[in-house]
Each structure stands twice: as structure tokens, then as C-alpha cells.
Image (tube, rainbow, N blue to C red; front, side, top):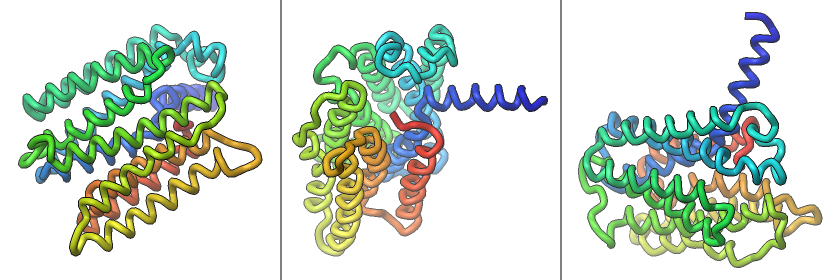
Length: 296
């Protein structure tokens, strides 16, 4: 392979990774791991299938997001792959739908409940992609996608799973959804440059509230520790948008996206030392990926 061919292959690979917003994949995997743990997961094989299927669905959703947004990006984000001419819109449509189909096929191997939730998640992804630029409450749709992902992950566990409205997996999914709503409303300012508002930040406190409620007795100290780490990172991320002379909303959003892993860590209370190390690794991986591939 010649040098020019190597450069072309590298450029094409980068285009595909940018389309899929691959830097956010560690947060998808952390959602899967958290839901799987909360559902009582045991078999690692099922977790691997779950992560693969979720990766396919997420990637398909991101591809289709750019496909639907091609005209908007032409005016507001011309550097994106389609308006910049790096890839044809028809190709993005084809790959996006293919990834979604592969995700559904993979997740159908995990049982009837998982299949149903995978279908609901896929529908939510498509609805979000299609109308998020014209629907004022589109952050709620994004939150619903993550909500279904956590429930799907819990249902993929061998025992426990989604057992009802009081299940910790359900409450954790709701708290993650609240976090995503707050994050997504902040992210909308990145492309529209609308005035920043503080109220979405209130929703970012939801994970700490749940952690303080559910972590009692011997788990309380651990809950305070992880809660402190989460709050510290959230404040560090938010200062780029609110407490600086030159606001950088994109940097705040990227930091909060990586913070999804910390939300999941709070949900499971850290788990065993090995589980805590895995979540820490996913958090660092998300930050490292962001240095190479834009998170938004």
C-alpha cells in the first residue's frame, strides 16, 4: 500500500468514526454494564452480546442523525462529513440502516423482553433522528433512548432483570434520563448559539440524589465518595460554559458526555473493586477518544 493510499484509508476511517461519534461509545458500554449489574447479570457472554448490539444501534443512530441533518449541517456545521463532501448522503443512509438492523438481530438473541425493548429503542432512535431539529422537546427523546438502553441491559441479565416500577434499574434509568435531558438542552446551544440558561443544570443533580437515597448503611460512605467525584467533574465541565470570559459550550458538553460513565458508577455504587476499575477505565477511554474524535 502506497503512502497516498494509506492516507486515503486513514481519512475514510476517520470519516466513519466521526459519523458514528465513536468517542461516546464508552458511555454506551457503561450504560450496558450498569444495567446488566443492576439486573443481576452473571454470564459475561450475554454482556458481550448486549454491548455489541448496543454499539450497532448507537452507531446506526448516529449515522442516521447526520443523514437527517444534512441540510441543517450544510448551513450550521459545514465541517460535518456529508456537507464537507467526505461521504455521500446515500452511503450514510445505507450504513445507518444496516447498523440498526445488525443491532436488532444481535439483541434478539437475548430473549423476548430484550427484543421488545430493542425494538422500542430503535423506534426512539429513528423518531429522535427524524424530528429533533424541529421538536422543542427533543432532549426528552434523547433521554428516552438512554432510558430504554438501561432497561434493555437489565433485561439481558440472567436473573432479576426489570422487575417493576420500584426496581433500582428503573429508577437508575430515570435518573440517567434526567441527566441526558439537562445535558441535551445545554448541547443545543452549541449549534444555535442561543443564550445559556441555568435550569438544565438542575437536572444534573439527579444522580447524586438517587445515590444518597439508595446508599445506606455500609454503602453510604462509598456513595458520598462517588457523589463527590461526580459533582467535582460536573462543575469542572460546566465552568467552560458558565464561568469563563470566553464560553465554550462544546467543551462543557464533551465533559458531561464523558460524565455519563460517572452517572452509571453512582447507580451501581461502585460494585466490586474490579467493577470500579472498569468504570474508571471507560471514563478515561471516553476522554481519550474525545481527543481524536469530536463527541458532538
